Amino acid sequence: MDQVLLNALDTSQPTIKHYFDIVSGTFLWKALPNYTLNPAKQYSRMPKGYIRDSGLLCYLLNIQSPEQLLNHPQFGFIWESFVTEQIVRLLQSKLLPFKAYSYRSRNHAEIDLIIEGRFGCIPIEIKSGSSIRSNQLQGLTHFIENNNCTMGLLINRSEKVEQLTAHIIQVPFDRVVGLGI
Image (cartoon, rainbow, N blue to C red; front, top):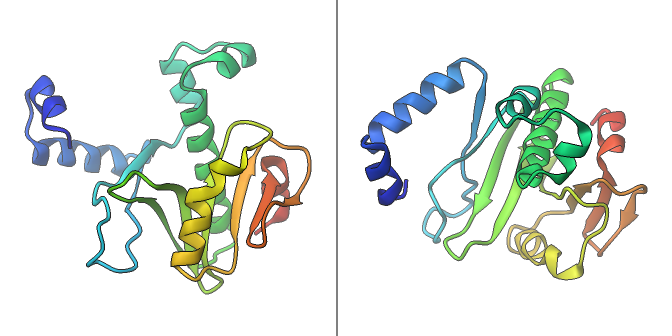
């Protein structure tokens, strides 16, 4: 954790970690460990987390309408948290054994969600928009290449399933829920 933040909170890192463990036990917070295929490489060790109840999050942020949500500066984070939680719950409901991770390298490459199970490793990028620029796929493309993944998913608010590259498929969020992964 950033030392400036720890100083501002006037609390030690072990205490903050303990608090997050307590909140995780209440099912309000979910921490995703950082994906590390090769521990010798330079990965961020800090887990990524999110508030599991997007309704509660919107209430705490005083978001009272869909219009306010779409225009809120935290909409991207809220969307990413909501989609991540829905994917995790969907997989749990199918009783598929899997592990969920996030990925951040020390050079700030990031993958929002990585699902690993008997089906392999599937990196998932989550975007709140309905379209994407090709340069926004670079991190996902590099992860797929470096980890020998068969494919990666881009989940967003688009209207159709579309093959974006040889190994990346765009899937609208409403189709993910309907897929029954």
